[in-house]
Amino acid sequence: MLSGLTKFGDFYDAAVTRFGGRTRPGTARDSLWLNVVERSQVADGVVSLRFGGATLPAWQPGCHIDLHLPSGLRRQYSLCGDPAESTYRIAVREVGAGSREVQALRVGDRIQVRGPRNAFPFAGLGPIVFVAGGIGITPILPMVHAAAGRGLDWRLVYCGRSTKAMPFLDELPIGRVDIRIGRGGPLLGDAHPRGAVYCCGPASMLGQVRTEFSSRWLHFERFSPPPVVDGRPFTVELRRSGVSLDVPADRSALDVIRDFRPSVAYSCRQGFCGTCDVGGVRICVDRPTGDRLVLEEL
Amino acid sequence: MEPDNLVLQPRDVQFDWSTLPMHWVPDEPVATHVMNVLHLLLPEGERWFVRTFQQVVPMISDDTLREDVLGFIGQEAMHAEAHSEVLDHLLANGLDPRPFTRQMEHVFRRILGPKPGLTEEQAREQLIERVAIVAAVEHFTAYLGDWMLNADALDRAGIHPVMLDLLRWHAAEEVEHRSVAYDLMCHLDRRYVRRARTMLLVAPVLFWLWVRGARFMVHADKTTRVRLTWREAMRAGRRGLLPKLSEIFRAFLRYFHPAYHPKQEGSTSQAIAYLAASPAAREAH
Image (cartoon, rainbow over all chains, first blue to last red; front, side, top):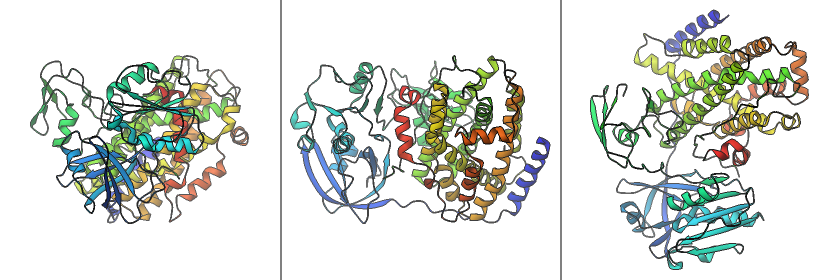
């Protein structure tokens, strides 16, 4: 029977590749061009921007948009408004060149946007503890409102350096809100041991939540792969392409190879799925013991 | 409102098979073995999806779709690994699946693998046809995923909890990424003729492989004398332990509707809710 299928497969392939006709490719999805309709300072160093345009795609708590900045930089920001509104709102803390450029936008400016996309979906099953650190309140805020609106059992732990540096304190719903200034103290405290935790904040905060909750029931957002710890710089040699690329201490071979060849396949960026495997090397995490990594097949 | 704009992420799941009995649907060897065919087909099948899609990445000119495809590849790679661990467990417990899985290697590596001696244009055409084949298969995995998430009879039947979690974790991710292969096919070639002919090819072959796999499993299981008959399979279907053939046939027909889109099958919010509660997916962070 299998030999029959093999013969049929060969025949089918031959027929399709020779008489398949002309393909009609689809068109790429258009990105959105949006106008800045509102700009305001919502905390020390934090600017909130509202974008408007003709019928914006719907979004849910946890969604982000990609801004394509005039300089060529691309930055992702969580939507922090109300999904029922006809505009998108983001809040941006100044941390580098990209955020400075976003903060410099003025009412009336036009900007190219991709999305919204959701990398941090909110399942809405209680009881829930939200943990937000500083600007990490942005994806959490719409979730808190959704939880309060649905009457779920929720509490929010919102940490920051000072109340002046914490945006949206005046927009939090009435309920179990715990505002923490400065470091220290357990974050989850007497949280329900079987509930869900939604966390967005600096890596140190995520680390603390993980140890307190022994890694269970945790939802968090990862815009970028986990940082490279104790990495040493090395050179990656792509034999087939005939090039050598320098990989700095804080980047992976994958990061550097992607700059050179954007179509390289990868997925989890944490070393478990194996999509980026090249001849037994998982280029998203593996580093050589010496200072040279040779990839024959790239 | 359905969140159909998910960023797809593979999950680093682990399953402990040490307590899995041979008949993990208690007293239902036929239902167990019909579902065991998943473990026979999927590791090789999903690895073939991964290889096919890896080759396609350079042909994608839409950034969002490229991200979707990369997420899809990672999820499928994890599915393949998880199911092949069940095969190892079966082998260790006296049921040798290798005569069948060797045939699957032949199907997915030889028959569906890259063919030599093609021009660049022909190789591209063949690759697009493979993508369309994956899209047709993914229509069934989305249908089965939706069925699995809603099959309350499986809970009532007392299925081994680790196996139920594997099946529903997989089902939920199939529902999560159900549009990717179809959108990729339309991005490369949106002609109806390709969609229709690949489904006409996939449906009978998949059905035939499934029947063959179930026969093999029932035969290879020395702990039961039950035979695989249509009557047994229909009875399990009536009890809700297997999807009904008539429903599968209706799902097959839906693919030919001109306005078909995979979004119409299953519910993303239900998938997210399961993944938020799944023991394996929760441990994966």
